[in-house]
Length: 320
Image (cartoon, rainbow, N blue to C red; front, side):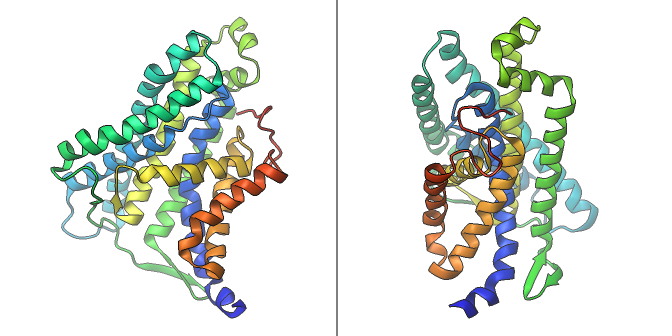
C-alpha cells in the first residue's frame, strides 16, 4: 500500500491542487456571506451551477472546431470567465433580494433564513431541471450536459511521474489571480472597508454612514462572481455539468470554509487547497469512490476538535 502511495503521490497532489482551487473559489462565497450576515447560504451551490451553465452556453455558441491554444485560448477563457461571473453574480444579487432581504428587514431569526436558503437551493435546482436547461439546450433538464473541449491538454512539464497539463495550470493560476484580487479589494478599497466594518459591528457601521443594504448586495455580488469563475473553470476541466452539480461540491466548499476558518477569506483559500489534497491523498489508500466520505469526515473532525478552523477564526467571532 505504501508503494502505491509513493507512486501516486505526485499525480494525486497535482489533482488535489486543481480540485482545491475550485473548492476555494466557491468557499469564498460561503465565507463572505457568513462574515457579513452570519448566514450559511446553502443556495450558493446553485449559484455555482448557474456559472457552469453560463459557460456551457458560451462555449457552445463559440463552438471551436478544435481545442485552442495560445492567445485564442486566453481570449476565450477570459470571455467565458467574465460571462459566468456576471451570470452568477447577478443571480446571487437576485437571490439576496428575493430570499433574504425581506427576512432581514423583518428581523427574522437565523433559522428562518437558513430554511429560506435551503428552499431557494431546491427551487433553483428544479427551475433549471424543468425549465431553464431544456430551454437553453433543447435536451432533458435532468440529463448530464456535455461541453466541447476548448483547451488543448498538452503536458507542459512534469514533476517526477506527475504530468502538469495546460488545463491544470489554467485552473490554478486563474483561481489564484481571482483570490488575490478579491483579497486586495476587501482589504484595500473603500467598499472593502465597508464590508469589514459591517462584519465587525453592523450598528456602528450604520452610524458611520455605511449602507448595510449596499454592502450586503456587494457581498453577494462578489461571492457569486467567485462561484461563477469556479463554474467556468469546472466546466473547462471536466467538460460536463448537470442541474445538481453544485450540491456535493457546495457542501465540500462549505467544508473547506470551515476547515480554513469560516469568515476568513485567506482561510477559504487554505481550506480549499488542504481539502483537495486530503481527498486525493486519502483516495490512494481507500479508492476514489471514497472521496466524498473523506471530505465529510474532515468536516466532522474539524467541528469536533477545532471549530475555529486552521487560521483560528471562531464560528461566532469570524470576520471577513
